[in-house]
Image (cartoon, rainbow, N blue to C red; front, side):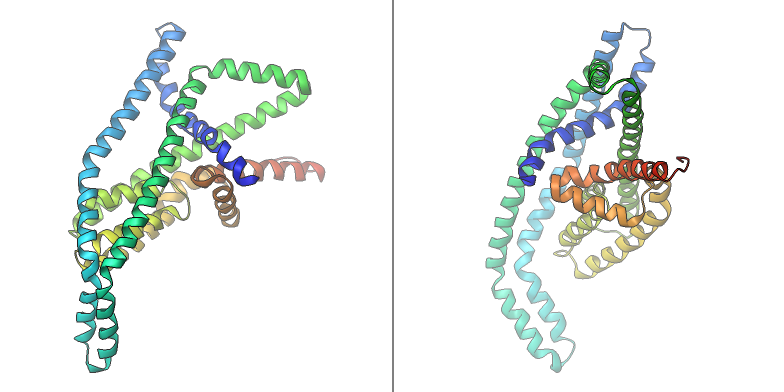
Length: 328
């Protein structure tokens, strides 16, 4: 039941998240176009935002897809030889490692089977990605409708609340909605900025140490970093897998570099860019990621933390009110 509800609501969650993100440049563009008629101003600003989003996506695909395909092709060619290379390295360490070397050589004979399994896993991943892209396309359409008529939607929502709940409760709900909107937009904007900074750090670091596939790996880490807590580690695994066929030594160096950059990002960048926008203890952050991801998939992973932040602060104010204390 919950899984069906989560799958049904996922496009709406993505649409709301996209609307919150795109509303930031939309408001700034509308301020720059203040001399136009309100409807023309909204249409012009929304068109410019959509064109900018499309240009960014096309530029990213043009820069990254050829290199990513080349990296995947190299991985497919080198995968059967990796156990043999490990066997050779182990065999050079002494006679006591002969048995381990023989076992690794036996694994190298099964390279074709492993390659077939990798191909099947790749097809399953592409199928899941196609489904996600379909959800994102629907979410983008929903976001355009939300942004195009946001004032009208807000006015009707206020009327419904006043009719059902009365003026006093409506004011409380509007205050809560304003707080939730500020937390959501601030968190998502901060997460996007943090992901861009992290991708830039990896570009500089990988170039400095002359690593292969600098742009694809940095872009993958930046995109996966949008998912809190676990996202960047998935990017690390993908990056190591791409470098592994070229050089085992460089793959190891990449892992060391990743840990160093990740520690710098977690302790210096993230608290300043995103941390102040959340106000959640670490345990609640982890709970938000696990619950959101379990119920709503990737959308829940991203939106679970701001949702939990709002619930955490509202719940705290309710508890203080019940105890007769002043809300913070």
